[in-house]
Length: 148
Image 1 (cartoon, rainbow, N blue to C red):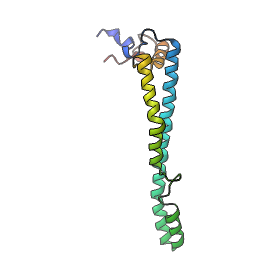
Image 2: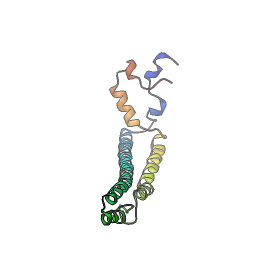
Image 3: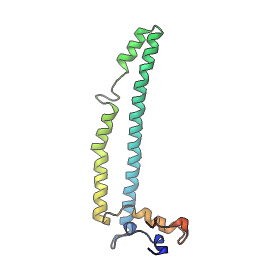
Protein backbone atom coordinates (compact mmCIF):
# COMPACT_ATOMS: atom_id res chain seq x y z
CA UNK A 1 0.00 0.00 0.00
CA UNK A 2 1.39 3.38 -0.92
CA UNK A 3 1.87 5.94 1.87
CA UNK A 4 -0.83 8.31 0.69
CA UNK A 5 -3.42 5.60 0.04
CA UNK A 6 -5.01 6.17 3.44
CA UNK A 7 -5.80 9.66 2.13
CA UNK A 8 -8.08 8.21 -0.56
CA UNK A 9 -11.67 7.34 0.40
CA UNK A 10 -12.41 3.64 0.67
CA UNK A 11 -14.37 2.20 -2.24
CA UNK A 12 -17.25 1.35 0.11
CA UNK A 13 -17.62 5.06 0.85
CA UNK A 14 -17.40 6.28 -2.73
CA UNK A 15 -20.56 7.10 -4.61
CA UNK A 16 -21.35 4.52 -7.30
CA UNK A 17 -21.59 5.82 -10.85
CA UNK A 18 -25.00 7.23 -11.70
CA UNK A 19 -26.10 7.96 -8.13
CA UNK A 20 -27.36 11.54 -7.98
CA UNK A 21 -26.75 14.17 -5.31
CA UNK A 22 -30.42 14.03 -4.39
CA UNK A 23 -30.29 10.24 -3.96
CA UNK A 24 -27.25 10.56 -1.68
CA UNK A 25 -29.06 13.24 0.34
CA UNK A 26 -32.21 11.09 0.54
CA UNK A 27 -30.22 8.09 1.76
CA UNK A 28 -28.47 10.37 4.26
CA UNK A 29 -31.85 11.58 5.55
CA UNK A 30 -33.04 7.97 5.80
CA UNK A 31 -29.89 7.05 7.73
CA UNK A 32 -30.36 10.00 10.08
CA UNK A 33 -33.97 8.96 10.72
CA UNK A 34 -32.85 5.39 11.45
CA UNK A 35 -30.17 6.68 13.84
CA UNK A 36 -32.87 8.64 15.67
CA UNK A 37 -34.96 5.47 15.80
CA UNK A 38 -31.97 3.62 17.26
CA UNK A 39 -31.82 6.24 20.01
CA UNK A 40 -35.56 5.94 20.64
CA UNK A 41 -35.16 2.16 20.86
CA UNK A 42 -32.36 2.67 23.38
CA UNK A 43 -34.71 4.80 25.45
CA UNK A 44 -37.23 1.97 25.38
CA UNK A 45 -34.56 -0.33 26.81
CA UNK A 46 -33.80 2.30 29.46
CA UNK A 47 -37.52 2.49 30.26
CA UNK A 48 -37.59 -1.31 30.48
CA UNK A 49 -34.58 -1.53 32.80
CA UNK A 50 -35.59 1.41 34.99
CA UNK A 51 -39.13 0.12 35.38
CA UNK A 52 -37.83 -3.35 36.24
CA UNK A 53 -35.38 -1.91 38.77
CA UNK A 54 -38.18 0.12 40.35
CA UNK A 55 -40.37 -2.98 40.56
CA UNK A 56 -37.64 -4.93 42.35
CA UNK A 57 -36.96 -1.94 44.65
CA UNK A 58 -40.57 -2.21 45.77
CA UNK A 59 -39.59 -5.43 47.52
CA UNK A 60 -37.60 -3.32 50.00
CA UNK A 61 -40.50 -0.92 50.46
CA UNK A 62 -42.88 -3.80 51.17
CA UNK A 63 -40.42 -5.43 53.57
CA UNK A 64 -39.80 -2.18 55.44
CA UNK A 65 -43.51 -1.39 55.65
CA UNK A 66 -44.04 -4.82 57.22
CA UNK A 67 -41.12 -4.30 59.63
CA UNK A 68 -42.67 -0.97 60.64
CA UNK A 69 -45.92 -2.74 61.38
CA UNK A 70 -47.82 -1.35 58.38
CA UNK A 71 -49.01 -4.71 57.06
CA UNK A 72 -52.11 -3.39 55.31
CA UNK A 73 -50.02 -0.77 53.50
CA UNK A 74 -47.41 -3.37 52.54
CA UNK A 75 -50.20 -5.59 51.23
CA UNK A 76 -51.58 -2.65 49.22
CA UNK A 77 -48.23 -1.98 47.53
CA UNK A 78 -47.65 -5.71 46.95
CA UNK A 79 -51.10 -6.28 45.48
CA UNK A 80 -51.52 -3.10 43.45
CA UNK A 81 -48.04 -2.14 42.23
CA UNK A 82 -45.51 -5.02 42.36
CA UNK A 83 -45.53 -6.79 39.01
CA UNK A 84 -48.21 -4.52 37.56
CA UNK A 85 -48.60 -4.09 33.81
CA UNK A 86 -47.25 -0.74 32.61
CA UNK A 87 -50.01 -0.53 30.00
CA UNK A 88 -52.99 -2.90 29.81
CA UNK A 89 -51.75 -6.44 29.30
CA UNK A 90 -48.10 -5.50 28.82
CA UNK A 91 -44.88 -5.42 30.73
CA UNK A 92 -42.05 -3.35 29.29
CA UNK A 93 -40.41 -6.28 27.48
CA UNK A 94 -43.64 -6.79 25.53
CA UNK A 95 -43.63 -3.15 24.46
CA UNK A 96 -40.08 -3.59 23.15
CA UNK A 97 -41.05 -6.76 21.31
CA UNK A 98 -44.01 -5.03 19.68
CA UNK A 99 -41.88 -1.99 18.76
CA UNK A 100 -39.22 -4.20 17.21
CA UNK A 101 -41.74 -6.28 15.28
CA UNK A 102 -44.04 -3.45 14.19
CA UNK A 103 -41.62 -0.58 13.53
CA UNK A 104 -37.91 -1.17 14.07
CA UNK A 105 -37.33 -4.29 11.96
CA UNK A 106 -39.44 -3.08 9.00
CA UNK A 107 -37.53 0.23 9.13
CA UNK A 108 -34.10 -1.45 9.10
CA UNK A 109 -35.22 -3.88 6.37
CA UNK A 110 -36.38 -1.04 4.12
CA UNK A 111 -33.25 1.00 4.79
CA UNK A 112 -31.11 -1.98 3.73
CA UNK A 113 -33.29 -2.57 0.66
CA UNK A 114 -32.92 1.05 -0.46
CA UNK A 115 -29.17 0.99 0.09
CA UNK A 116 -28.92 -2.14 -2.06
CA UNK A 117 -31.22 -0.89 -4.80
CA UNK A 118 -30.01 2.71 -4.97
CA UNK A 119 -26.36 2.68 -3.84
CA UNK A 120 -24.99 -0.86 -4.34
CA UNK A 121 -25.30 -1.45 -0.59
CA UNK A 122 -22.91 1.38 0.30
CA UNK A 123 -23.71 2.93 3.66
CA UNK A 124 -23.13 6.48 4.87
CA UNK A 125 -22.36 7.97 1.45
CA UNK A 126 -23.66 11.36 2.54
CA UNK A 127 -21.54 11.37 5.68
CA UNK A 128 -18.47 10.12 3.78
CA UNK A 129 -18.83 12.97 1.31
CA UNK A 130 -19.21 15.48 4.14
CA UNK A 131 -16.03 14.06 5.68
CA UNK A 132 -14.15 14.42 2.39
CA UNK A 133 -15.30 18.02 2.08
CA UNK A 134 -14.35 18.94 5.67
CA UNK A 135 -11.09 17.10 6.32
CA UNK A 136 -7.60 18.43 5.63
CA UNK A 137 -6.17 16.20 2.94
CA UNK A 138 -2.64 14.82 3.56
CA UNK A 139 -2.90 15.62 7.29
CA UNK A 140 -2.20 12.52 9.44
CA UNK A 141 -5.12 13.28 11.76
CA UNK A 142 -7.52 13.71 8.83
CA UNK A 143 -7.02 10.52 6.84
CA UNK A 144 -9.99 9.15 4.98
CA UNK A 145 -9.65 5.71 6.60
CA UNK A 146 -7.24 3.65 8.65
CA UNK A 147 -5.26 2.37 5.67
CA UNK A 148 -5.60 -1.23 6.85
